[in-house]
Amino acid sequence: MKRFAIVGHVAETGGTFSLNDLPGSGGRMDVLCRCVNSSLFLSHDLRRDVECYLVLCGEPDPEKTILFRGSGVRHLSPDERSSAAFIKKALSIPCGDEFRESTPGVYVRRGGLSRLLAEIPFAVLDEAGEDLRRVPELPENYLLSDHQNFTPAEEEAIAGAARYSVGPRSLHADHAITVLLNEIDRRESGWV
Image: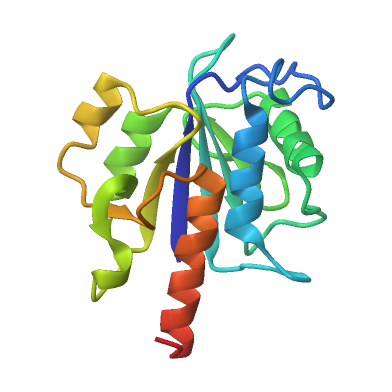
């Protein structure tokens, strides 16, 4: 199982954002939706062995985490609006400390990055990290930030994590996921 976690620093947590204004009213929800799509979609199929965690840190509610599980997702289309509609639906249901399914393969719970890090060991995708193409064995779990850098508190929480880079230039989070998955696909299929 491959896992991606993306921190949405200003991503709206109440589910009241407009599907017509994901960058504004959603707190850059568009960035997170693109990460969901990059994590899960193949041409005419889904990656069934991938989970994508969205850590929403914006207003008005406390932090929430939304999980897209590739093996269970149904009726998701490869566009930002479709992913956003699933996120909005998840945020509309009451949630507690355990994941609650809102639609097939999509779950929501209270809690943010510190809780997720306590449960799953993540490597960090970071342009200053080690070149992943020079690493003999890649980890399965990766943490990324949205359009903002990790906060000092987040940096402290991930201080001991391995850091990998997908290349010499800084990429958008969704592009970094695509490049990483391409490298994993190449290795798994024997193309390397």
